Structures are given as structure tokens and as C-alpha cells.
Image 1 (cartoon, rainbow, N blue to C red):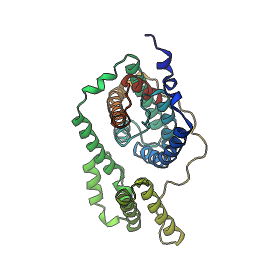
Image 2 (cartoon, helix red, strand yellow):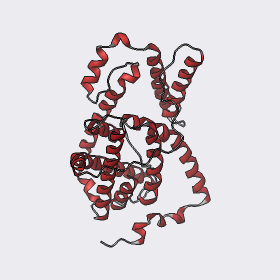
Image 3 (tube, rainbow, N blue to C red):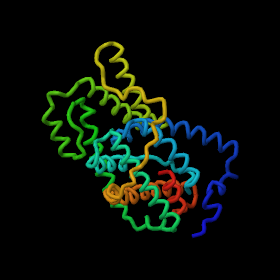
Image 4 (spheres, rainbow, N blue to C red):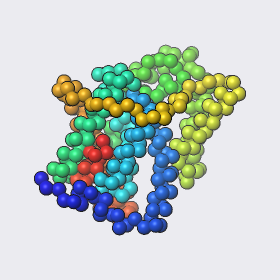
Amino acid sequence: MKLSTRRLFPFLRWRHRVSRAALRADLLAGIVSALIVLPQGVAFATLAGMPPEYGLYGAMLPAIVGALWGSSWHLVSGPTNATSLMVFATVSALAVPFTPAYVQLVLTLCLMIGLIKLALGIARLGALVNFISTTVVVGFTAGAGLLIIAAQVRNFFGLNVPQSSSFFTAMSSVASHVSEIDGWTLAVGAVTLAAALAGKRWLARIPYMLTGIIAGGALAYLLAAMHVAQVATLGPLPSALPALSVPDFSLAEWRDLAPVALALTVIGLTEAISSARAVALRSGQRIDGNQEFIGQGLAN
């Protein structure tokens, strides 16, 4: 199948639009987005059962590749709540989270998803996403929200209980350990949540997630500095790049991961195209679904 130069290098289509004024506006938007996306990346990595540093790289590299080879001028490619939780819920059944074996499986899964997306884009099957019901996406997102609660509720209350990908199991575990809730950890979590909600309501110009992170981080720092309490933190992130890991190419692992890869491909592409089209309605841009599939595939 022949690919044109503009499809191989789609950024050639819009390079003439990059003026000094546009570059200045994009730089400001990039700084604000980075303040939101980088902390999110760490959180998403933790949700997925991956070391935090992988979240940073997952927030940076896919964004660059997706912007250069995708179709949308505004879409920021990277991990999401739904995909992170689905990775944890499925891969944790095959390996222990945060271990080298787990990391290898997740990298293998990402490679499989990228290849599927790329193949769909090259085959010009971008219109397939139009047949996915919005109700399906809403239902999946709602389910992902419950999984996020299940994965993080123990950290919110400062409980030393096993992490669970089951909502009801996690709630039951918290209920049976109510007496062990750490008050200071709960206070930091509550302040973070309250500050984020307040920022979203009254400080619309400031990213509300950043507001929550600053408020919660400041409280945790003060508690430690005043020797009142030592709330658990992520700690310093490694300054060096993680060692290169080779995906697992064994047939058995690819067979086990294939259903998950297909499901995550559908969800990821649906989220990406839906977000791109929502912004395109305001900017007047026409989204090329096939090119976006290629961009998302290369970003993976």
C-alpha cells in the first residue's frame, strides 16, 4: 500500500501555520499543560502498576510523536485513567506490579497496541471508531472511575492493606480496617481534594489539579518539617533514564495479551478521536481519522 510523503510526514501540512505569535501562544499552552500532565503521568504510572518514572516518559515522548504524526493540532497524547486501570486490572493477573517481569509485559502490551493502531491507520480504517456507541465509552469510563477508587482508597486513608483491582473487595478491606486509618494521611488527601475542587470552582485560570497538588504537598511538607507526622510520599524520582527493556516476544505471552491489546486499542482510539473532534468543532479543523490512528500507533 503506497503512502504519500504528507502521510508519512503530516507535520509538513501545518508547518506554514507556525508564526511567531502562534509559537508564543503554543509555548505558554505547553508550559501550562506540562504542569498538569507530568504529575498526572506519575499518577497514571502508579495506577497502572508501573514505576513512577515511566509515567514521566509516558507523558513526554508520546505527546511529541502524537503531535508530529497525528492529525489534531490540539490533542495531547499520553496515558489516561481508563487505560492505566485496565492495564493494572489485566496485567496484574500475569505478574506482580512494579516488578521487572510486570514492566516487560506492559511494554509488550504497549508494542502490540501500537502495531494494531498503526496497521488500522495504514489500512485506512479510521472510520471504524464511528461505529462505537458513546454509551459504551461512557459506561467504560464510569467503570474506570470505580477502579480508580478501588486502587487508591487505601492510600487516601493511609491503610497498609493489599491493593485490589476489585471495587467491592477494596471497599470491604477499608471497612474492616477503619480503626487503622491514619488521620494525618487522610487530612492531606482531604485538603488535596478540597483544594482541587475549590480551584476548579473559583480559580478557573489555574489548573485545578495543580492547585490540589500544591496544597496537599505543602501540608505534607509542613507536617514533616514540624515533626508532627511523616506522610508517605513518592520520594525522589530516578534522575537517569530507566534501563532499556526488551518486550517479551514469546507466543504464549502475546496470545494472553491479545484480547487486552484489542480492547485497549478500541478504548484508546475512541478517546483520542472523540477528544480531537470535540476541540476541532471549536477550531474548525477537519480531523483525519486514519492519520490520527497512525499518530497514536507511533506514539505507543
